[in-house]
Image (cartoon, rainbow, N blue to C red):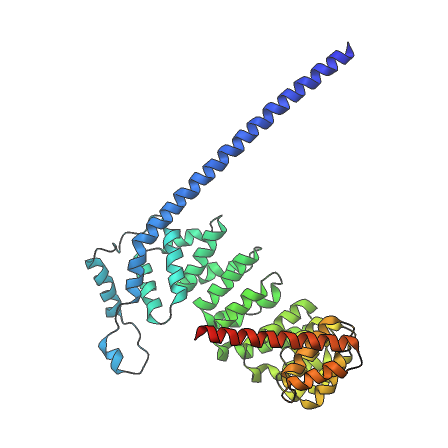
Length: 399
């Protein structure tokens, strides 16, 4: 009797389990179709908005400057009358109504095209785009997008205010540089630099030290957009202060790597100082990549004896870049290194030394006592010949 009851319970549980999973499967399939339908609706709306505004946006950027500009060599700045002429031209063509704001559902798609075009242009074209956006009264809705749950819309709003250089949005965006999401905070920092460069440089430039979760590649891209003359010295001071505070090795190495974007004369003394004092692997490697003169040559040669293969690898690359004939012996010795990458980079460095020819390299490859050294030289020679052959073939085909 107990066996029969237990069997009935098992059958009932199995039946209900099957029913539940079947219902869940149906719900998932239905949800998938809903998402697909929603995606199609969004795509169609985006295409409609793009088709409606793309031509207008491009034509706004192509309006001719006054004839007086062509006679003058001085940079021309749009006057209030010029801006009014831009607006009047498009009202006459029936392109848009300046007093009627964009529909909320159309705004993100419009801003995507507007920002894309804004990032692609320079000079007065940007100012014309800004004037068009202001007359479409996008500000109020764009402010709401700053608090959107959608990461895409939030970043779009931040970037829009940055391109507009909207001073009224500065304080609101300033709060976002402390946002826990590194993507939002980094885009906010970029926007602040565009809205008010001087204030941001003074008060918030150190964020690249404080935010360890920011992408070094994106930070470097933002710095490359700035004027070297304006941020070189502040960045060098920031690196020097961070070195004195003994911040983490990884973050210090990142900061030093940003110096590649600044003027060499600004960072050379600091790099020489850090290279001579630091024993942190990543920091030393970052400094070696920045050595451009003979000032630190003695220290570079000394580091050839380092126990870390990563440092020895960077040393042979630096010696090859500096190209001193007296370092040939060090590079030849490095062909005997226990690490393959050090041997490979040493052989590559020998290939670019001013006093070395392919015949001399080939002679070394035959006569060196170490088998590993001979092998790596043969490999680099073969790669160099293959590269030359491919380049020759390409030039013949192009003719």
